[in-house]
Image (cartoon, rainbow, N blue to C red; front, side, top):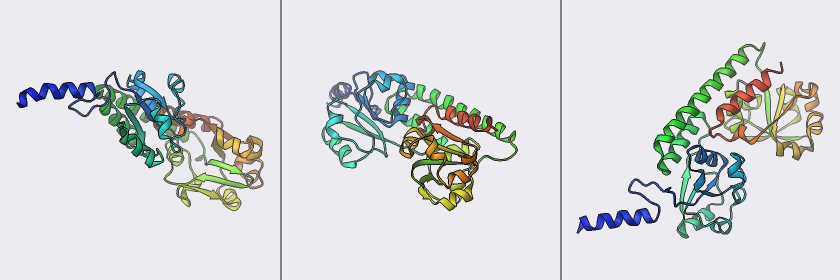
Length: 289
């Protein structure tokens, strides 16, 4: 009896896109990736053709940006996702709200929550975890090796250009700014991790944890050489001129020398292009000294 059941069970698993090894992505699967880094990894593993949707944090590769959007990863709608008829959702713990993910599961969609530790090691583990789910372990190991080497090479470049500088460069990452009020990255943030890997000192990390408001007095005391922000941060402040000419910023080296760097989403993505982001930041800052 057991011998008769096994072939039938295998057929059913195959029909529903499953396997005895708990892999969920055969070529009949319809994947929605919720997190830009996940989308990049899926494409880098050669499974981009299985994706039918993505969230707004997906900005690379170009093919992924042409897929239907399910909205921002922290403001998801079950109806929008279900309209794409997905069979597999790949998301990080940043995906919200939780009740939407629960509804997707109740609707019969398989949901995988991917670990998302914001470190170089965390990126490698994320790649391996997604590769296992997609049943492409060999490709996952190769991608992990390539990305690991890219990050190591970028850190070496950062150390080299930093050593050529007369003194460490200080930079504040500004999440947003309105008037004289700045929200900056302290310790235990993605921005602080990336700055450190690029050989840049984040003075706010000494006193602040997470993203916190920064007083004018503290900004002057920290005296950053650069301000860093993303495009939406620049827009929220009203533009580069406004960011560099607030009373407090004008009294810092960044304000006096008009040093504001706009970083793209890749800088904080913690995906396969992490090495490029580290090297680009190190070269961009230290090349100007």
